[in-house]
Image (cartoon, rainbow, N blue to C red; front, side):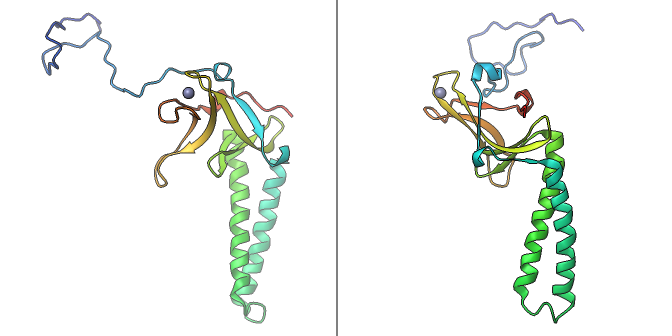
Length: 189
Ligand SMILES: [Zn+2]
């Protein structure tokens, strides 16, 4: 298809609807369109949390399965065998452990695929290294507009879609960069 522009774009700078032929014209629909930056330009740095603690993701899965089976047995006895389960606090405890177990299995499975996942709070992220070890990191960058410090944060409505953005400490409203975690360098052990 020809990209020639057959219409006229002359006018008095008012908005002409349905008059022009915009083929070939560069119409910028999004006002939020931002330039993209490389990790080098942003000077992205990882800051290990929890004292740089790392856990083998296979161990996390195994822990999850064992705890999951254990809590199922525990729940069975507390719910259906009254002699063992007079106190409902035990079933609450086992329910809690079961959720922890399921989370552990799901988290390590998701992380093996995505390598990067929001963890807790607004600034902590779970990452997986090349050798399959889980680590908790905070990430910072240098603002490409003003050179100030930026923190990677999980932002957005509580019930809505949330984004991981580097937010400038000096101009948090305008200086933001959305992170594509796939551009982050791999973590070597
Ligand atoms: Zn800035």
